[in-house]
Amino acid sequence: MTVTPTMKLPGAAKDAKPGNTKAGGGRESNLILGKARTDRPTREEAESAIRTLLLWAGDDPDREGLVDTPARVARAYEEFFAGYDADPVEMLNRTFEEVEGYDEMIVLKDIRLESHCEHHMVPIIGKAHIAYLPKNRVVGISKLARVVDAYAKRFQVQEKMTAQIANSIEDVLQPRGVAVVIEAQHQCMTTRGVHKPGVSMVTSRMLGAFRHDPLTRREFLTIIGNPASSVGA
Image (tube, rainbow, N blue to C red):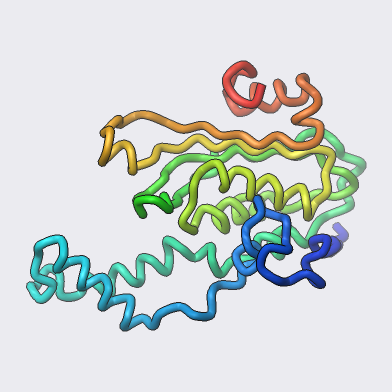
């Protein structure tokens, strides 16, 4: 099988300034292309901030059960928010052309998704479904799951994350169509505020054939187990 590098995201190389890169829903280029902020606080400053939150909550950060908590939380945040150091474009930038002319729908469904609400910093847990109609080349399926993680492992709102995933796939692979559906529960409304457990939010982004062809859209929604009338119709 021949592996072919795809072209770079249009405009990314010459316009690598915040606000110029369009992929991923209009985010600044340092977040789109996996370039984390260079002015991050130090690890010690982060742990000190966590210690302050423990004090503010009314507990004693020096007691046995909490003395190592600031370090543990800092390490957890490195995992929770690894997406800021990930490059979705690079993940999609190697494709396969020897597919015997395959041009039918490719669907990856039930991709586990773990993110954090940017308003309350609490988890968003759910799953993503991705489909695209290839044009001359396909990408390894694990890369689609990695793109989901790259955008999920950041502070997010679900609508923006859905658009970012779909837009990146469209911009890099340039297929005939892209569809992304995300179903997730938000702990900002299940464990606080209105306290409505069991409520799921569904968002969709349909591009190309999935937006313009009702039959293509219906086929995708049927495959992922959603009636055409419920999402993206």
